[in-house]
Every structure is written in structure tokens, then in C-alpha cells.
Amino acid sequence: MFVEPSARAIRVEDPEEVEKEAGRSSKITVVPEGAEWNAVEQVMLQRRSIRKYKKAQVPAHLIRRMLEMGRYAPSQGNCQPWKFVVIRDSAIIQGIEDFCVGECKKTSSAIDYASMPAGSFKRFVTRIKAKLFNRLQPNMMHPVPVSGITAIAEGRFAVFHHAPTVILLLMDKRGIGVPPIDIGICGTNIVLAAQSLGLGTCWIGFSKFLNQSPEWCVKLGVEEPYEISEAITVGYPVGNPTHLIARETHEIGWFEDGKKQVLY
Ligand SMILES: Cc1cc2nc3c(=O)[nH]c(=O)nc-3n(C[C@H](O)[C@H](O)[C@H](O)COP(=O)(O)O)c2cc1C
Image 1 (cartoon, rainbow, N blue to C red):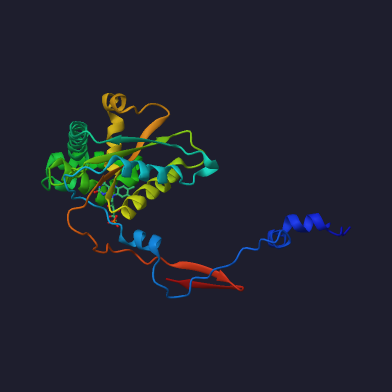
Image 2: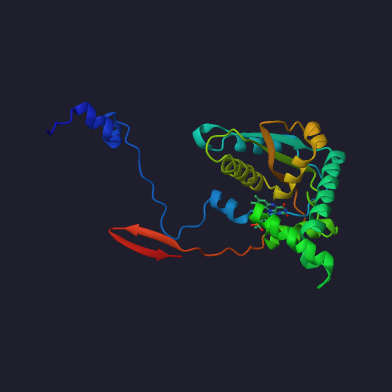
């Protein structure tokens, strides 16, 4: 049976109608095609991972400002599954660097068979270990992290890039849905805020090695149900790194007016 919707039901279902009746219609502002990138877009385009920092420390109030932007990040069910640890003590930064370098040395000698002499027994055994590890953690066996670990182990690459400030992003494992996504969004707010404040940052995935140290976890206040998800280094960049890093042009499936197009 068809039921005539009541005036009240129409109001509930049509928010534009409700707005109009209340006399507060909001305007649509369309940015014209081809317009210059706005301030937010420019911050996103200009951000680069910074791996060389000036020795000068970043004022504490700017770090607080960045963390405030992290605090306002969206999260599933607004569960906010994060906690921040700010490290500005050079002895501690050196300590966590040394620990992560040690872990990279162990990991590299355990899995990086490609750097071992061809035909050697060591290479043969290490290759089997690497294959096993690849089954357990396939994403970590990509050449980028593996060569990064070897470069750190050999002293060719620093973990925290000698930055004056390191922010650890701790993740509450009880977060709703997929907490690592929430951490990614929170950290993105932090690095974009830093860029807008004239600061350089770099995400540090290798910081996760710290979870393997009960001593460092106690010292840094990392305890269940939290773990270190990522770190972000912060400082004033050396030079003016504006070089563009290549990005793929992934295909975009676009459904409109009963048609599907593939755009790039
Ligand atoms: C989650 C995550 C972890 C990363 N970990 C590291 C890292 O441990 N060390 C590093 O030097 N760069 C790290 N990066 C930076 C990437 O290498 C960098 O974002 C990428 O090469 C693109 O360059 P761009 O950030 O300058 O645009 C990480 C980036 C992300 C998003």
C-alpha cells in the first residue's frame, strides 16, 4: 500500500529542503577547471621525504602544533588508536639508531643472500631462509626494504637520518577495523602540517625494529596494547628539496551516465 509521506518525513529525507525552510541555504562553490593548486594542494605536492637535516632543533611549540593536527585525524568509529612519543634527546635518538642498526645487521645476514658470493654454501642456506621468511612476511621481502636493511647494516644509510626530533606513532592494537590505516591518516596529517610550517619530515618504517627490544619499549613507554607502528623524523631540511619523485599513473575506473570509462 502506498503511504503518502508526511511533511516531516520529507524534511528528514531531503536535507536541502530542511536547510531552505530554515532560511540558511548553503552555497556551492565550484573551483574552475585548470585553476592553480590551492594552498593545501601545494603543501601536498611540495612535501618530500627529507633525509638530511640541519642541526638546529625545531621549536617545541611547532611539534605540539603538528601533533594537534594528528589528533584531529579521522579514524574508524572515531577510535583514535594512537599515542605519540616525542624524542628530542640526542642520546636517546643515538641509542635507538644503534639498536635498529644492530637489528638490520642481524636481519641482513639472515636473509640477504643476493649480496653473498654466488655458489657459496652460505648463499644456499640463506636463500632457503629468505624463501621461508618470504612466506611469513611477503611485503618485507621486496627489494626496497631488503636493500634498505642491507644499506643500514653496512653504514650507508641511517635509520633516523640524524634528525633532531623523532616522533613515534604508537598504535593501539584494539582499534576498530584496520588501525594501521588510522595511523597512516594520523601521520599524514602530521607530515603535511610540518610541511606547511616549513619543516621537513620522513616516515621511518624501520623504527618497527624497536618493538623487538623490551628494554627500549620500557624506556619509551611502549606497552600493551600499544606497539610502534611508524616513526616520523622532523627537522629543518638541508637545501631546498623540491625535486619530484616519480609517481605511477594508475588507471581510474569512472562510472557515469550508464557508461564506464577508463581514465588516467
Ligand atoms: C609508511 C612509510 C614508511 C617509510 N619508511 C621509510 C624509512 O624507513 N626510511 C626512509 O628513508 N624512508 C621511508 N619512507 C619514505 C618513502 O621512501 C618515500 O615516501 C617514497 O620514496 C616517496 O618519496 P617522497 O616521500 O619524497 O614523495 C617511508 C614512507 C612511508 C609512507
